[in-house]
Image 1 (cartoon, one colour):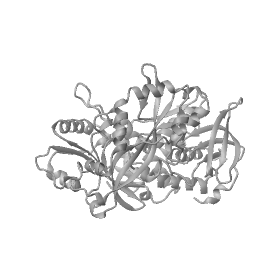
Image 2 (cartoon, one colour):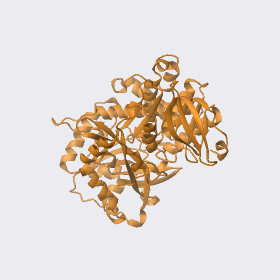
Image 3 (cartoon, rainbow, N blue to C red):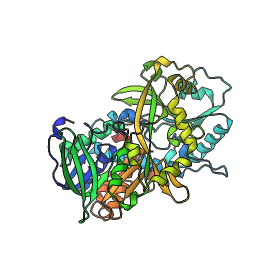
Image 4 (cartoon, rainbow, N blue to C red):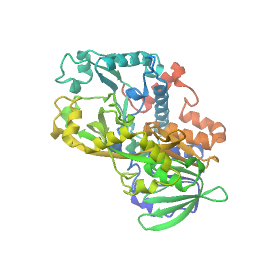
Length: 501
């Protein structure tokens, strides 16, 4: 996207304004434009290109989160049974994303799907007798669901050597370990996907895109519209822009903007910034021995987003390995944010929530301090639990994106740390915001449909319904309950997205 598109001046009034140029805003703008090409839509992005923050390729793990390998989505209940309801929900949400992307390819809006999505088996790996037993039970339970059909289980070293030769190299034969494998997994470059959508909006729609433009403030007007202060960061020009509907998809900066809007629904929300780091290897000899995303159990007191995993990544046609994440800490809400972001976000409305969440998460605070204090040699020790003979010179440390974990008001504890993704909407449905981190980009289409369901319910069930079903054929159906529909949808997306499982 060229710099020339920043030289225009925004109009004083739009039907829809989207704040942020990440996967969420690009998805919502594309959906709205498909539903009503006459809507006047503007996207304001404070940096020089789309998808430079959380959506950028190295700022997230690139896992197409389908709940195939993430063990924290399938907890064991006190009676010993495995609950797969959350896993089914997340798997369905990713199927919605794939259908939408397949539609974009089908319409010719975006080309070359392998630039952003590739087949990559998803595996869960566990060590020891207890976890092997759990994985076996999990496999049995998940195999009953059409969404996880074809999942394989093995605790045989020879089989595991076929699946993950790099991990099995130099293993002691007596070590008890087991894995499940789902060939339908994917590796996704959300940055490339977002920029492809951005290019389509820029070239083939009347959606206006303003780079280097920062929305500073969102204020309600008496006529129920929203007035925003927008700063052109190149020319230091400030102006006011009015919109009927505003979506805040600004990653970590969503929180202060939501706060400035003064909507009742935003009261008590706080944010806790956590950054991530990866060990990355471009050594092609190693890469050739590992063709999967392999997730294991999180350690005690570690947050769910810190599950260790060793992944194949495919970015701009180049394969690499990624291991992590290791938690980091910065008071910035965005990678290219300000160190004052955290202190400036604290106010009288959220102080109790923040203190409550901290008080009830002291083990998490200790965990973060230990993680931040780690040196490279200590990180390599963690990697050697996966790759016995990992050499320091083959791996470099890369800083991932900033995530702001949401802290919510909680009557009992004061505040509660949330690890999911949350859509906050005002009562009138004229302002919506996305908060939180995980499973994030994978479920962008589902999250944006939730926004539309909350803000434009009559249109979605009325004049937009036909278009919606063209884009997402399974909309409104439960895939878990309909094996014929699941197979039909998966065959269609596999074909359009050029996947190879």
